[in-house]
Image 1 (cartoon, rainbow, N blue to C red):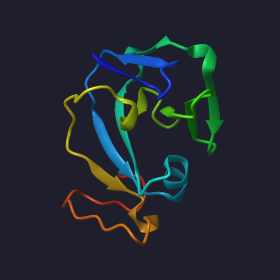
Image 2: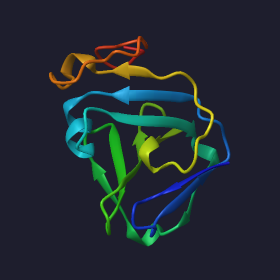
Image 3: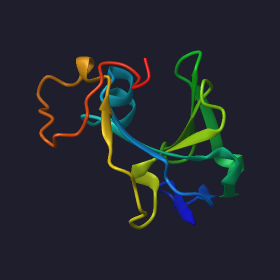
Image 4: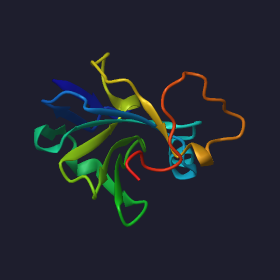
Length: 133
């Protein structure tokens, strides 16, 4: 089981599935929302995902017509992303995942808009948009 939560501890989640997808998103929106060079997301089966605590503190930010970002209204931690074209998955923000779960090898997406001061050096696949576009 994968578990995680926000910084202040008021919101927690669980998923009873393996991480099926691991991506580093370099788009300008993810960079701004995370305050970092990129954001890392772990895809898990949506039907195994549940909030274990703190649904009352959760808020939704629709960052586009396809993406809802769920965050803690107390500390601001972005916890998960719902991407409407993939209704069977929920994307956990890896920085909120507890421990060291098994993960597939990651890939990079939206590298055409990556931060100019960041160099990708890990040799993993790079995509200028969504990997399946």
